[in-house]
Image 1 (cartoon, helix red, strand yellow):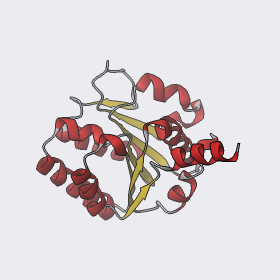
Image 2: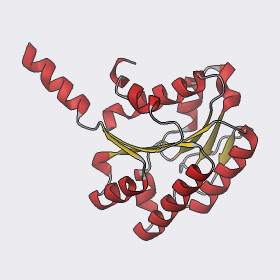
Image 3: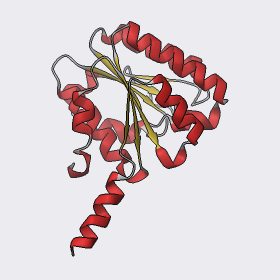
Image 4: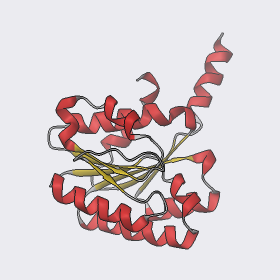
Length: 193
């Protein structure tokens, strides 16, 4: 995964923080897969993936069998629900209560050293009002800090309103904007030709 080098620093500094990560659509799949597999490779780390846009059928085949017991997916997509002991289905991206309940069930099942990943938090902005989403993120981030967990909130920057980017930044401990990195690298490569 050569285009995900930028995630190494983010993951190295993520412990017990809420990190908000802005990426572009071309970076999305590789960055998400790299993040999940890197975290699962760590001995005591468990991952809760709140899947808002990535199909479970696309996520699960990327995970080596020996790590699947360390991953629980909260399926908040609008797609067909998959029956699995490590997948909790919700009513979709508009079901913030269902998402929070799924996270709490997953935390109880996994135990300690948990990293919670929202794969595309911008999907929540389509189904929820700004003030409702702001309250949810505020409560969620406070809970992560109190429980001394780690959260990584990914967003597709071009698909996220500026006011919501500011809201997410406000409630996060760290903010990373990699959305222009891939584009800049391509432009640089073309200039060197």
